[in-house]
Amino acid sequence: MDKLKYLWHFSLKSLKRHWGRSLFISLSVSLAVIIAVWVAAFFDGLNTQVEESVVNTNIGYYQVQTPSYFQTTDSTEPLIWTKEIEEELKKLGAISYSPELVLDSNLTTPEGSATLIALGVLPEYHQKMLSLKIQGEFVSQSDEKDVVIGAELAKIFKFHLGDEFVLNYQDQKGELRSELLRIKGIYQYGGSLFEKKYIYLHQKTWKSIFLSEPSQDELFNRIVVMTPSLKEEKTWRKSFQALKLRTWKDLNPEMAVVLDFHDGMINFFFVIIGVTILMTILTPVRMLWEERVSELKMMKIIGLSKKDFWKLGMVESFLMMSAALVVSSLSLAFILGIQSKTGIDFRFLNDGVSVERAGIKLPGIIFPQLYLKHLVQTFCFVFFVLGGSYAWSLYKTHQKIEGER
Figure 1 (cartoon, rainbow, N blue to C red):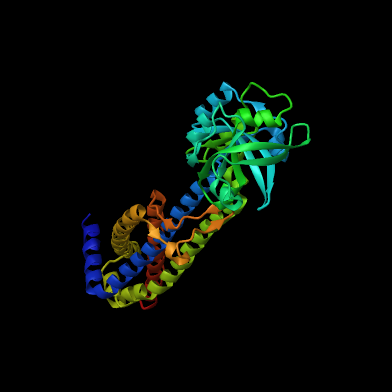
Figure 2: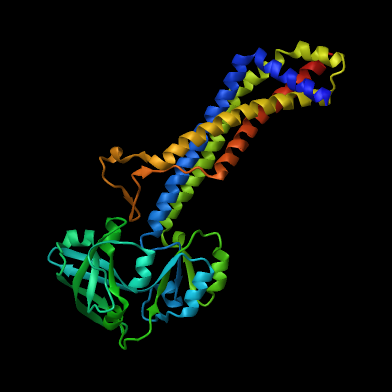
């Protein structure tokens, strides 16, 4: 116990004796950690916002699909929406869900043509899943061939509330048909591609125009599901073996690749900055120890064993790690604590115009997020950099002492 106490005092004395170099090492590691973890927190915040933007464009975290729709997006064989399916979704922890019928269609006007996806929805389910800002009203049970369209579609084709347009499609028998629909509402949400592509009908209207024999049952080609996370994907697949399951990454692979690239870039960045700062502080740490060779040699003569020598190095390394961890952790908590609430505004880079990718409106204000894993990354980074530099310096110093005996 006395020996350990002596090692602590001796380590502190050594660090104070070369306080300038010790301060440089500690601040260098702290600054590197702050930069590296901040970048990770920034991209994690961006990825979270992008993921939310994707799942909120009528994709959801999961989609439970009928086998025919899964294979070919064929709408001709919808299944009945049952209470058993709803109970299973609740059991799995789904926040909200929407059974939907899907119809590929198009419209043609003097202003041009557009490919549309007409969604037959049950408003009481869909409005809980996706809150659309609507001018006018959403579709309801009493509607007769009313439709809600996106603001971008209305802008391009100069549609207004109460206007009518002709929807062209193939019905359940494969026959080409046209239907006159009245615009009951115009929604704003998500991005221009989304607003141009999706239109909403009540299931009652959808079934009356598409099915040869309209059903009184509530049907679906897919069920769009909002859930806290994708961690239980195997459980979901097991629960819906008779149906097919797709995640948002399956449905929007382009954005999934972008987010995976971000994760890979963060890991690569950590490695690069870790190696760089290791090479930067390796020389100062070596100098801290090699300047004490004579002193350590004398201590060895009077009884300092190899084990005690390494203990001395570990104590000093621990003190430096503690200082770096405290400085970096407090700094990150302060910086990210503020930025996670205020965000970082990048809209000036594009003159305030929203940027879209893969049909998704990318956020102009990024909110970095501080997670527990960032604190783990901080510890691992400090341990790798300082631990590695001290271990190498101790090894080389001990070799020098042994060589001079």
